[in-house]
Image (tube, rainbow, N blue to C red; front, side, top):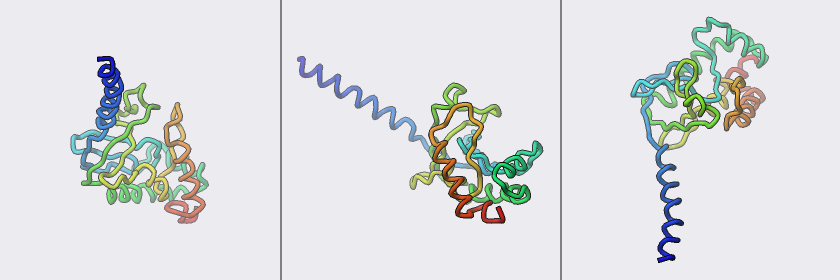
Length: 176
C-alpha cells in the first residue's frame, strides 16, 4: 500500500507537468499583419510582439525619429522600413499557423499592453520560426528597451540588434 501511495505521489506531479506543458500548445492562424510588430489572429485578437519595436507606418508621435537618433540611422531610412517590416512579417506568418508564448514580465497586466493587445512571443508552426527574434535579426526592427521589468529575451534581442547593425542587415545596410 505504501509503495502504491509513493508511486502516486511520484507520478502525479509528472502528469500535472505534462498537462501544463501541453496547455500552451494551442495554435492560431494569423489573419492580418497590422505592422512590423503587431499581428491580428483569426479570432480577431491583436498580438504585439514582446521585445520588438518596429518602425511606425503612421508615425504621428515622432517615434521613428527618436529610434533613428538612438540607432544612429537616417530617419528617412527608418520611415521606409516601416512598410518593409510589415511585408517581412506578412511573408513569414500571414495565413500561417503560430503558437504564442507569454513572458512572466507581463503577467501582472494579464499579458496586455495599454492598447489591450496581447503581449506574446510568436512562433510559426511547425518549424518553430521565432518571429520576434527574426524581425530584429534581419534589421526590420529594434529591441524594445522601455519595459518596466526585464523580459526573458531582452539580452538576446539587444545582441541581435547589435549584430544586425554590425553586419549591415536591414535598416543598417542602407547607409546606417
